[in-house]
Length: 377
Image 1 (tube, one colour):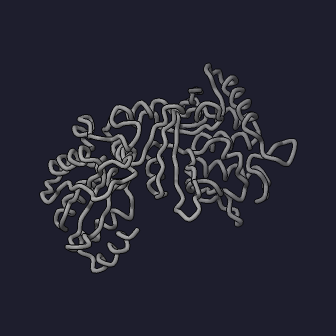
Image 2: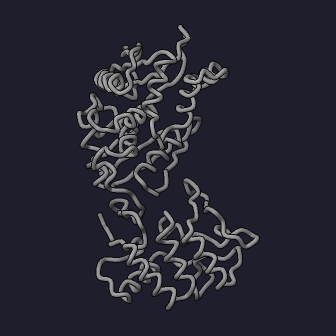
Image 3: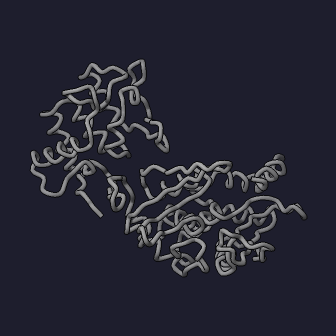
């Protein structure tokens, strides 16, 4: 993995002061936005003035470009730098934000790389510096043969002490794969919110890849070749979700196991109503060993009693065509016990499943219609 040294907050302040006093306004703006906005430099270089400033001259609250997965907020530091810049420069809405001084085009990444190295040298810093030195977060090379740089928390799976680590692991266990030959982790789902959640848990700004399929829902894919992330996940679950046969003791004993269970439910769970008896239930599909372990975890975690593992009548190709089972939690009161446990202090979740469980818990008058729709999806 190719790495660069990141500027500390103190080093950033030195660079920022130097550039403000000795360089053109464009370069000062680049330092501030590059350090404070969660985007790669190559993305920021694509911006035009209209992307950050309204027609009335006000700085926007967020930035969105076509092809970006989401809108990024403009923080206070960046807002002040933009206001300062527009007071110094007579910029048109159609101009590049980081325009060249010699021609009417935006500057490129290699030019920024030269600037950053020169600035580091001017303030007396020793190390390996480049464009990604401006980034607050750990920045890695996207993989062999690519110049795709992005930020990611390489320590995400060092342990399961945080909600985001446990929840992301639950998602990966149901819908993730590690391709050994390419040294690549891939998380691929048809629900965009799930893919966004997985990416957010890794504190990554790498764009999702969207696979459009004729006559089918698109697939949203997040991938990384970051070796620390891959090794971290391999501590807990197999490289392929279809090979997941049991829940490891490291997961069972973690203080955040409720968030892990929520991740599994968001990935392979169903919230609905039984077609025959009309009981409300939560169902998780998987292999017997995994579901039996999850049953014990849930019983111990929240005291659910009406819970059982039953064999499915048909094999599921998602599990390699092998015998698959369903874990049933039946009854409104039982669903409430589960709901209170898995959503305790939750920040990451699949909105539609949380809403479905809430409808069951509160006995919403629209629950029946909502569940019938959800069941058919």
